[in-house]
Amino acid sequence: MRRSAVLLAVACATLLAPGIGAPVQRQGSRNKLLLVSFDGFRWDYEQDVDTPNLDTMALDGVKARYMTPAFVTMTSPCHFTLVTGKYIENHGVVHNMYYNTTSKVKLPYHATLGIQRWWDNGSVPIWITAQRQGLKTGSFFYPGGNVTYQGMAVTLSRKEGILHNYKDEKEWRANIDTVMTWFTKEDLDLVTLYFGEPDSTGHKFGPDSQERKEMVAQVDRTVGYIRDSIRRSGLESRLNLIIASDHGMSTVNKSASDLVEFHKFPNFTFKDIEFELLDYGPNGMLLPKEGKADKVYEALKDAHPRLHVYKKESFPKSFHYANNPRITPLLMYSDPGYVIHGRLNVQFNNGEHGFDNKAMDMQTIFRAVGPSFKRGLEVEPFESVHVYELMCKLLGIVPEANDGDLSILLPTLTPETNGPLSTPLPTRTSETNGPLSTPLPTSHSGGRPSLVTGLLAAVILLAKVA
Ligand SMILES: *[C@@H]1O[C@H](CO)[C@@H](O)[C@H](O)[C@H]1NC(C)=O
Ligand SMILES: *[C@@H]1O[C@H](CO)[C@@H](O)[C@H](O)[C@H]1NC(C)=O
Ligand SMILES: *[C@@H]1O[C@H](CO)[C@@H](O)[C@H](O)[C@H]1NC(C)=O
Ligand SMILES: *[C@@H]1O[C@H](CO)[C@@H](O)[C@H](O)[C@H]1NC(C)=O
Ligand SMILES: *[C@@H]1O[C@H](CO)[C@@H](O)[C@H](O)[C@H]1NC(C)=O
Ligand SMILES: [Zn+2]
Image (cartoon, rainbow, N blue to C red):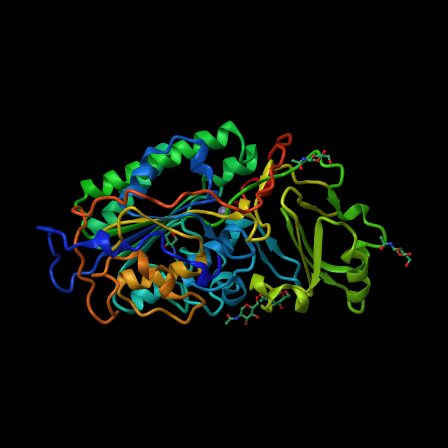
């Protein structure tokens, strides 16, 4: 999971014998890039569902055994890591919700999508960087793609309405058609496209449910539709496609006898709290009142074996999360299976994310195919923070300062592509390269907790917090 741990499955050189008769692109032409995110696609969701399109894509391109998201494993923070290459403490989008500890304002996920100052907090995402270097970009529902950064907006942007139905397959296809015209008619170089599934279904019914499996089949059909659309649009030899996600999903044990409930903790009182962000899955933040910080910390630190409460300065550095002015003096997370209930129990989801980003249930997917990618290559797990550098390389743009390392994913590219940045990206289609016959086994050693599916329900904003 660390950068040094990324190993390639095979010595790929043998795969890349020069393609005989493969068309060489005109000098200086630049490949286009489509980044697609299917929210909450856990790394192993394909293992219990027939996914012919994802399977074909793996044969035609690159597949990571899994990808490790950033902590906190939430939608907006993790999506912003993909497009900035920064850990969450370094880009500042630390939560799905905008909040202000002074005014006490808290806004839900969808409203926060439109709060420019929440996103534009000193980091410049890839759309803006690309545009500054002369490219044209688009964002279709991608979190963070519908606000301005340092005064600049994404060239073409779409934001979903507040009561958007995230699972309408017909609409998904229409959105893909629109994105294709953005590439062909508007000549965009980079588009990020977001789908709110299988996250919503995973929350509502749980990751082990039949409903989730059906949704993964819908995602797979959509992957097929995307690839067909790329072909139909004549983009196959000059468009790279990356399919990724933000985090996984874990079953909530709603029948656990030891629920994490603040209202039951002895020695803790909300009277000592100035501002709280609880009832949001397995994460919480607290601002104690003046002079109460130690008292509150003492009351909470051993209050529950499934709850891990830290002072901001002691939060594990490996999470790369707490070192940001937006993080409150106390913060916490719970173990997979448990959510954090505050004053009342108002969380009813059967699936949640937001847990430790090293938990196997939080691992997610990375797939790529296109003229710049090797074929039939499976790579070992890596952190999502590295995707940004790869995308900049594919687009031939100079990245902003970031936490990623290009060398991690460079080996996924064909030798023609992974030359120095200054050269234009000459690419050759790799139809002549057969798929790798011996992909890495996909077994894993992680301790993935098996949890029981609970009851059900859906709650106001929590249902749609992605
Ligand atoms: C938070 O709210 C306070 C009080 O309304 C306001 O003075 C402050 O500017 C706000 N902070 C941010 C970062 O918006
Ligand atoms: C980031 O946001 C915080 C408040 O949330 C604010 O105090 C700070 O000035 C912002 N930084 C930048 C560079 O926008
Ligand atoms: C946000 O999206 C809408 C369309 O959904 C678009 O009209 C608007 O220009 C976008 N705003 C920005 C700042 O990207
Ligand atoms: C869920 O909680 C119940 C009651 O505490 C416990 O018996 C059960 O083993 C838990 N299930 C899982 C999958 O952890
Ligand atoms: C609560 O406070 C009392 C008195 O300080 C102490 O004896 C007790 O151990 C505390 N309980 C917990 C769960 O911290
Ligand atoms: Zn998400």
